[in-house]
Amino acid sequence: MKKQRIRILMVRLGMDAHWRGSIVVARALRDAGMEVIYGGNQMPANIVKMALQEDVDIIGLSSLSGNHLMLAPEVVKLLKKEKAQDIKVIFGGTVPPDDVPILKKAGIAAVFGPGSSLQKIIASVEALKRNY
Image (cartoon, rainbow, N blue to C red; front, side, top):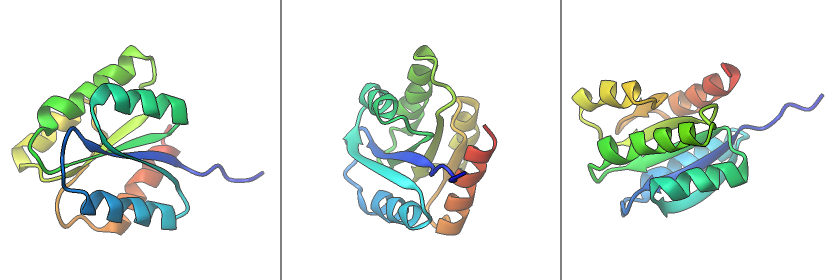
């Protein structure tokens, strides 16, 4: 039986112009054997629509523009509305430490700040897939 590859949608949340981190993470996930769909800049409704169309396991959100407390939880809410809460959402970007518990309470499975190791991100994605 062939092991199913993890499918992950990587997007920049909202109109964030900071692309480098999301590309580095997307390439690392791809090099780790995952199937990465890169969606560029998207708003929550489009992110959920793309995730459903692409039948992904995980959505990776990236933002450095400070919109994370408003837009990231909206992705989780829309997934629940679509009865697709089995799709896990992770977030990477500049997040004040006080915002991490808020994001996790809102349903974000993992939060990665600046300097997070690529190995930690890969391991976390693999663990999320194993656990559902």
